[in-house]
Image (cartoon, rainbow, N blue to C red; front, side):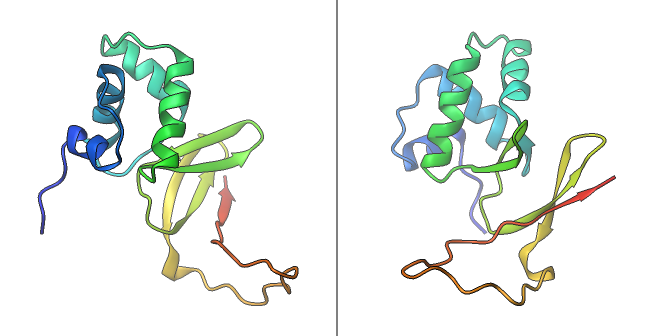
Length: 133
């Protein structure tokens, strides 16, 4: 098993310039195990760790990380979106009361009866969010 990559190695492997702010945010995202974060959560964590960053920079960085394949953007509804450090295909439980996401391995959900796709369309992936209370 290979040792985990450092935040610096992660940024470089994605061809992202390791600015001080990107590196600080990457440390908060990728040093711990898989996690689901909101932009507000990451912004507040950065401020509490003494990182000078704007909320706009946090959003821009999360979107850059997503575009480079370092994160998955999970949109729960029009008011709730999360960034997932686990980029492997999987699904989620969404706990309505707490706003927490929990991973569901993709192999435990079987999908049957997919409707006929429009001409020329192909399935990119199927994301399932099961809402629980």
